[in-house]
Length: 77
Image 1 (cartoon, rainbow, N blue to C red):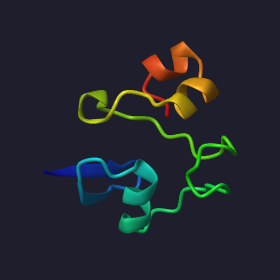
Image 2: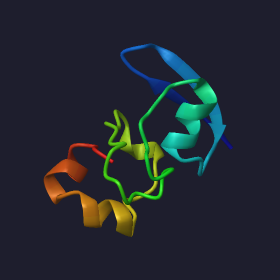
Image 3: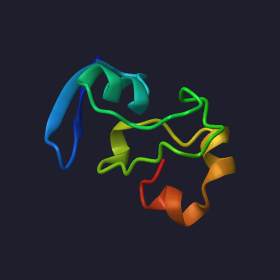
Image 4: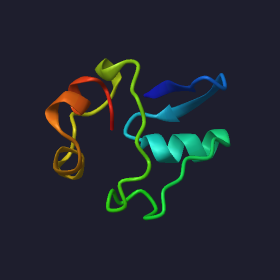
């Protein structure tokens, strides 16, 4: 299943397969997101705000370790 991922405020969109990471979708769309660790979640530099949390997976262990409950509830990953 394909999903549409939009990057604001620049207005870029890309269709990716479900299960694709936001970082991978950004790279495919040509959107530069700083991720020194390559998306492993160890550098804590590539936070994004999810406008629609219904279409994404639940936070994984790396995300719950790095972010507090308020940030996760607000759609920060």
